[in-house]
Length: 548
Image (tube, rainbow, N blue to C red; front, top):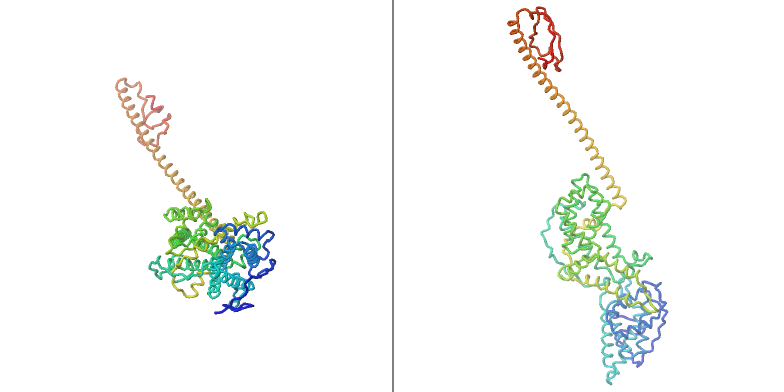
């Protein structure tokens, strides 16, 4: 393929021995994502300082982040100006920065895609003219042993431009194809899904792999340019950072899906069962190195509408799954700036034979704090430290994208895959209403059970009291019987004594006699005095048993 610019065809060289290029420093480029960027600083002074300090990290920071501050046209103009007026050392530095720029952002700043056709920009034409004219000039000088290293460097840059112009473009930071790996390969049966997802004929393990594959694909499509909008307050992230926006929505949707599936269960036993299965599902995503999906599932389990179900967690806590969730919570804890999570992702990344989906929200947080907490312009120059920090975050994301492995998920029919992509649940307000109803119904049920228990207990107590009363009455009757027996014995003894007295003293007491009836009902339980009459015998005043 050959690319044409306004003045010459690819491969032509100019016979001019000097470079006479003038550029308007106030010109702008359509490829600048931040046309309102503040340029109230001395760009030339910043570039001069950068050229004098041969620091590869600072070079990368500038190339990765300048687009958020100035236009590509402004940077190119300043570099060319420095090249034309400085020494050979500074000229080497300018060419080095241009090499880095072309290798990183050629398709962002120099070529554009229009209806799948690549078209050169005005900036490409200027770059082409500058490099090719300078390369010819230095080549001629090198014949006389003048500036041979610079000539070699310009020739290398010239070839780099040609290669980039003929190379296929891509949208992500890393455009290398991924190798599919089934290192997590378990026998994936077509059994019924363990979690109620309304997705038929897909296994627990396969659902995990499908979610990983979707997250991995979206993550690898994030272009570096999308990261430039993080921390800005104009809402441009929704329009300009579509893949980041999808990743963020994905986490929120999966979290609400988890909470919804739990709260829609119609009894406590089912809610406990589904909660435990989601804990196992989170653990599965962790073993698959999908930290973004892991955060989504654990986030759903930790939503207020779920955490407030105290009775649910009391029952879940009786199982070993609860300890698994506690360990995952510790891993995802934000203490010490997510130290545990960062270390786990770094460890997974070092095992380069496995795909990894990092938690994107962690890097969005870093970029937001860097952007908000640090001024871009300090003392009239670019704050290169801030640009370096931003560049480091961009590089970390790029490193994850360059892992040359993907997830070996099965090819699913389009309806099934669409359902997995569209997994989501109710809003937070709706989830809270469901949670409140569950707690209210459970409280009412517990109150009803408590009332029934108290009522039953009261009835049992009344029956117990009645039984005790009957037992006491029987005891009293037994005591009365014993007392009557004692009184009868007393009467018999007295009668015997009286009989003996009559025998001894004759008729002086012949008119006195004791009744000898054996009926116990004839006597009082208190042994009180009783007057008894007999038709055949005279009256006798009865007495207390103690008066014998």
